[in-house]
Amino acid sequence: MKTLSDHLLGALAAAVSAWVVLASAYLFYITPARPWPYGLALAVIVAAWIARGVADPAARRKVTQAIVLAGALLGLTLLIPLGWAPGAAGQFAERGMGVVMGVIVVAFANVIPKRAGSARTQALRRVAGWALVLGGLGYALAWLLMPLAYANLAALLVLLLGFAYAAARIGWSLLKHRPATPQRPG
Image (tube, rainbow, N blue to C red; front, side, top):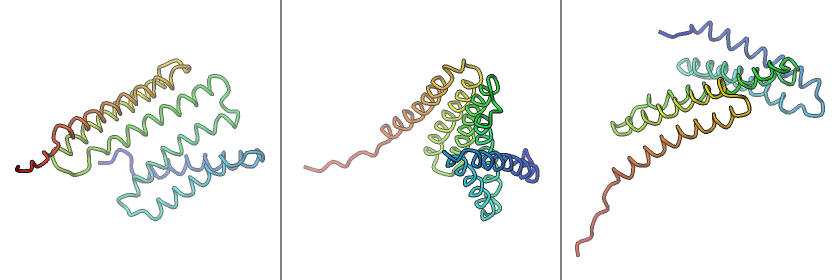
C-alpha cells in the first residue's frame, strides 16, 4: 500500500509548484539586475511537469515525488529574497533547506539496494545503501540540531564519512575477490 495516495501526492506537488512559480515570477519581475536564478527555478518546475506528463505510469509517482522534494527545496530558498525570512525565520529556511537535502540523500540511497544483481553485488549495494542512508540522516540531523555556524561543516563530514565507509567496503570487497591472473607455464 502506498503511504500517500496518488491524488494527494499530485495535489501536494501542484501546491508546491504553484508556490515556486508565483514566488519565482514575482522575484523575476522585481529584480531586473539578476533575474536568471528565478527564471531557472521556473524552468525547472516546467521541465519537471513536462517529464511527469511524458513518463510512463510506473515512473509517474517517482517524478511526482521528485517535484515535491525539489519544489520544497526551491520554495524554502525563495523565502529569503522575498524578505519573509528575517532573523529566526531565515535560520528556519536555511535549516529547512539542509534537512530537505538530507532527506533527498536518504530517498536516493534507499533505492540503491533495490536493484537486481548477484548475491555479492546485492551485499555491496546494501552496504552502500545503508551507509548513505545513515549519512543522509546524519546530514539532516546536523542541520536540525547543530548551531548554525557549524551545521554545514558537521553535515558534510557526516555525509562524507558515510560515503567513505561505503567506498572503502566496496573497494575492499573488489580487492578481496579480484580474479587471479593466469600464470604462464614456464
